[in-house]
Length: 366
Length: 173
Image (tube, rainbow over all chains, first blue to last red; front, top):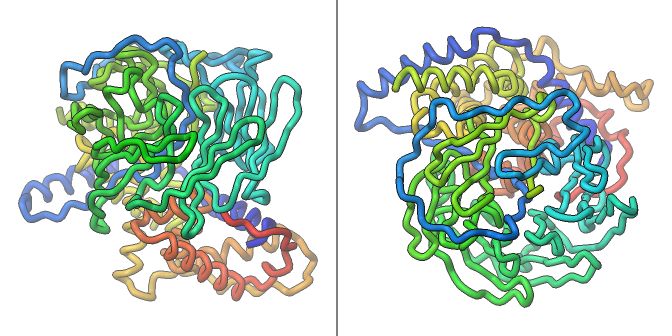
């Protein structure tokens, strides 16, 4: 498809959606209908076919582990408990763009944009300590540390650009074909890509000086989660494999675990059993004993040694900011970030500025 | 417990309802059908709230797309959104006014079968990749690609002016 047609279609679909009028009593009407549905469901209970569906695509958030991690012990209490009212920090004022937006756990928002890294939004310039507004590029991915920012453009699908915010210079590198899943290594020195070429499925690691290594692994039985992700150690990458395909009505396939590869030479190193897919390096606890995954039905905290589910969690897109603290965007809306313990008990909430509420955020240690 | 659920659910709808209604409108093509589609999806979310509370928005979106597509299956070929008139064919080499083209294209989009419109909505409104779209719809990436191709072919039939857009480079993502 031509770029012009692509852009026109995008604009028209947005035009179409913009034609909607507000529906003021949406919540009340949905609540009434939901209660009826629930009563009916109870009445017909056992044989009722549940329209089981949950989320599908995991937003990619580029995160980095805390440099000095304390050893972690497994969390004690399994059930997820929602604290009714954890302390809520003040909402940042309109001048929030003038300094790094610090979240609980001392992480900062480094990027705010539409889904899939699309260009419009905000980008933290660490050197100057303020946010830049962005409207160029189709994808913008700041490194979790330093001044480099990876950028992509749809009309250069095989390339990635590295912008140095200090010098203002951009270098473009050809990476490969059929690329997906750009992800920075935790130390911000390497970029990981999944390449989905037919018969050449695998991953590519690009150093920031432009040297790259491609490793063909084959699909190995991945289905829903066919993108490689860094492990927290930054030396290995993983691919989530499927145990059983889900029926059409189910949310996603049942995972059997993560096949781990050496990022340096592409050799398979080990297999870690778990019933779901980690989103990125910071889904792994600092000591590697626990990992948060997107399970078939819900986000789960899993023990990596055994594959045992410790407890469900509200979100799979989490960052372990310390041995026993998780940072994630609060579910049921995107207005707040929350710092929670591994059981999902909320400890403190940080409301976001209004401009960020509908955007996808990337966070990293401050 | 019920109060907690109701409170959380209401807060969720108040926060995300407008954005979800926008998606529903792109899928359904008119206000009434969009509200109906969304209320139905929200009702299902409410009924399963304790299980999906952490994943409510993607859950509702998935229901929206599935209800729209299954509605299409049930209604067979009747499901195109009725438009007042068939989109008028754009005259090739017309004034070149982009606004006219977009208006025609918008009408043509509303005339697409829901499955094709769902694919375009996911790709262009939600900015999902082919693979992500396939995962959400529970089908193969090849199916998404073929539905996209059919949708484009239909749009080209309805709006021949589309072919006048400059073609610069292939987009493979």
